[in-house]
Length: 147
Image 1 (spheres, rainbow, N blue to C red):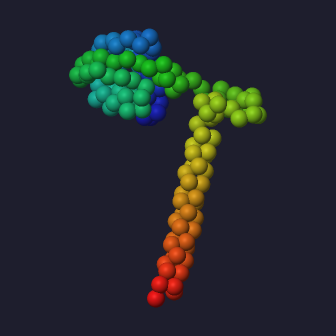
Image 2 (cartoon, helix red, strand yellow):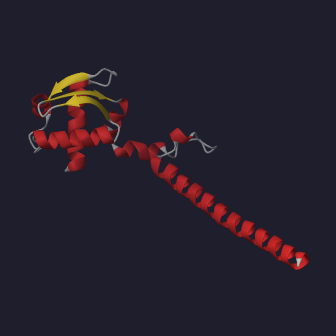
Image 3 (spheres, rainbow, N blue to C red):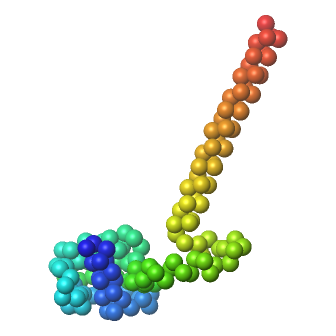
């Protein structure tokens, strides 16, 4: 229900405030009026959803009270309303040569970043072992020839 509520609130906010980079004062009752009848969202649930959307970067909020919000709906908010089926066919149509990171699907970028993090960790670990071995060999040679 939370995800479904997010989408319904975003759709209502886009209808009311638009995505034109201007802060607008929106009343909670106005948002709730635009909600479908099957959505069981009250003012408290609306407040929680708006905080979640702000935390996810879909909204910027200047101030809010229980009855009104001064907010800006980002253009990214329309991503929540786009059907997920559209993203799946778009992935194979990307050129096979290294696509720009912004063109890669989020799951692939996450997988690549995990690989990169593992590679960095492995390189640091091996570097630590090699460095420790070199220092140990120098210490053994100094002790052998110094005494």
